[in-house]
Length: 137
Image 1 (cartoon, one colour):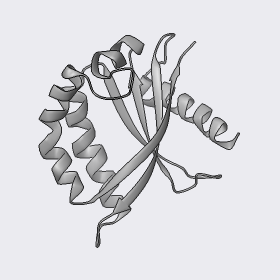
Image 2: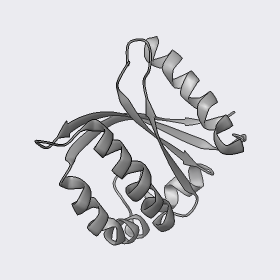
Image 3: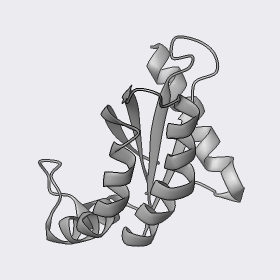
């Protein structure tokens, strides 16, 4: 239940950030992150890299997709991070991903272009996610 409340709050944040208005048919993915930082790396460094380097490069290579980093500030997920994926539609997501969640050919091509920035990020740490995709009704 608490994750549902957090998810609803994140949908509202995504809908109002930078004047972005969620529209019927948009797909929002909430990826709750488990981060393993490398020695001598801070969470602030990881977040800064994600926001200033990884996300802009990702969005350049995956047209129709916006990414956001959200940090829990209260409740069960306080101090946790989530990555919010905003797709124009399910069709936009499906341009890059197969039904089994793997990248398709277009997604692999876009991800390949990201490899240098991914390798740079791996110097800071790694992360895994659990997620749910939501379609705006």
